[in-house]
Length: 130
Image (cartoon, rainbow, N blue to C red; front, side, top):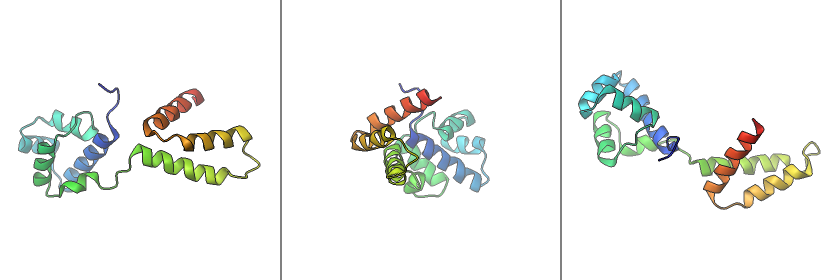
């Protein structure tokens, strides 16, 4: 079991909360409509519990949205990491303020095809940097 919620689960939960609030619906009322406690709704909204396909369908009916609504605006960590590194590398190219090791690191990082490896390396770099 993962230590942290999956980014997709977090995003879907945020979309549930956003729509529920737009309808001025309490967590308790949504929970009752789903046959759940408000604490279970809280866990969905925080991404701590995954929302299964049948539950997502029921949520779409109760919240009066199409299922794609829950995924609107989501970008995977791989897309965000690749975009950020690509943009940063373009900004750094030829910059006299950036040392050669940084240029080499960014070029090497861009060549890593496995998104999971890139994420773990980025997490490691954040930990090392404090």
